[in-house]
Amino acid sequence: MVKDKERKDEAIPDYVKSLEKVFKESDKNRRTAFYRYGAWRQSKRKREFYDYARKLESELGIPRYNPELGIPLGQRKIAPYEISKEKVVVEGEDMHICNNAAIMQLFDDIARTAIMDLTPAHEILQKRLGKAVTPETLNRVMEVWNHTIGGAAAVQEHMFEINPLLVRDGYVKLFSGDDKVADLLDKRIVLDINRLFPQEKADILKKAIGDKIFALARIPTIAVRNYGSAMTKRWVATTCLSAFANVYGISGETAINTLVYTLRHRTIIGIGDTIAVRYGRGENSPGGIPFGYICDIVQTDRVYPDDPVKYLLDVAEISSILLDAGWLQQMLSGGLGAPIRVLFLISNEVFDSIVEHMAGWVVEKYGGYGKAPWTISTIEEVAKAGSKYCQDIYDSSPLVCEMLFGGSLRSRVMAYSTAIAGGLASGHPMIGVEAAHLSQMIRKERTGRLGFFAQDQFHNQGQANDWTLLTDQAQVMEMRNASYPDYNVVANLTTFPSAIAGAYIARGGAYACNPLVKIAFSENLAGFDFGNIRKTLVKGALREFMPEGERDPVIPPH
Image (tube, rainbow, N blue to C red; front, top):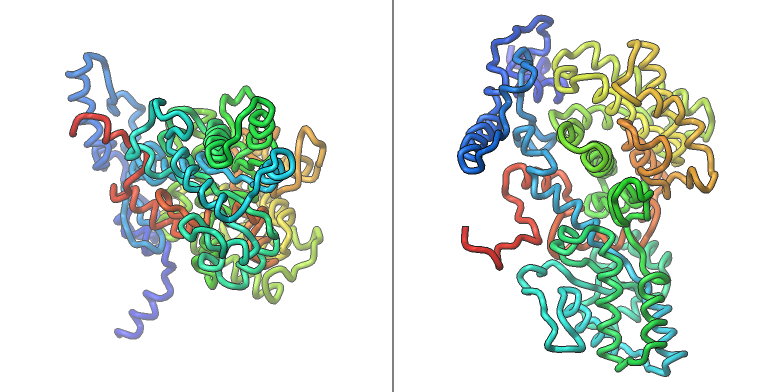
């Protein structure tokens, strides 16, 4: 009897066990009760918010948060979420961008990062200004630059400066593909590629960047919060100029202007491109981050090189946070709705189980990753397999449908897992993207609908949009971003990074798009841990994550 029970338990998928735990109902039930759960009062966080709001009404004298004003949906079970693989249960509100300090820091750490090629500046110093650039002078520049990056003065001591405790997370480090060059520099200011990456990946990265010297700069979190992400490149260039002027004794309008132009416009690389003015966001915002860069920001493939599926899941998670929740739902739309875009990919083992299944299907179908031909047939095979597997789960599991409420979330899970599978099968992101589009058309044929608003448009137009390379409309897939035409809709933007990540894993190597971005996010002295994404998000949900850029040093004790 015990053995029979063990076999029966083993046959139950992990996602069903997790969902039955949080919903406290059996997945076999085909009937449920209505209007008995207590509406919003069943949520611990909503009860807390209600109490806070009544106090605020007394203090401020104006109406505040009051869920009694909303349309009653008391028939719904408001279940908490068990974070996949972490076995930690969190409230939905704790994964809202504005309630989770780790998620806010994730946005900040990307926004405050820039990379600078020091070669052009060194050429100007040597050839035009006659200065000697040596390891000693470069070490001195870095010492001064790590002073100025926090808003400190390097030339005029009577200038007003920033409290170092407010800007503790601002710093600059150097990296190079030439070990001999790196060995000559002060170890405190070197980002050690050999230490941070497995040897094979380190060799690939060093070969890609050559003997140039690059600076990784992260301006203080408080700077991007106060002035916006477009400030990052200017802040980095200005503080670098101060360090050069101090160490090399540079003066004179012509020399300074030449360096200013070089540092601000010629040598600096942001993480996010300039986007259309109408969106009201500057450089380094989520809408301008190339999809391939997102894959390189994620460091799970470096930390867990033997677990490629974990990396693929993390790329989808980060993409959903940055693009679906952050860019589309919060920055362009504003207000409600974004938290579920964060949670549905990382909770109750649902997405994990589907991606793991599709990765196994790729190996069984094609004999391994990257072995499928680049053909229409491959696109069709992947799309049919992904859509059928997902839709069969939706049709058979009421609890999965309750968790992924509405066609929008079910559409996303299907699109993202199919995109990953297409990339894994072929080693080409376009196969993954096209398979994802086709999976949605198959689902629409089967169910009669997709999600809401513009999800149909996004996938119906996908084939035409994806293959064009007109300069005002498109780019190779890895270099596109969310601000391209027809992408700024309630759509499945995570489709693109998911396909790129799958293709990268299939091809092998050390980076998906840009080796400089991969190296830049391999170390973060203070802030979000891009190598342990899910654990860091959980810390934020449990209120165990300490963010940077807080104003405690200059406000009353509280």
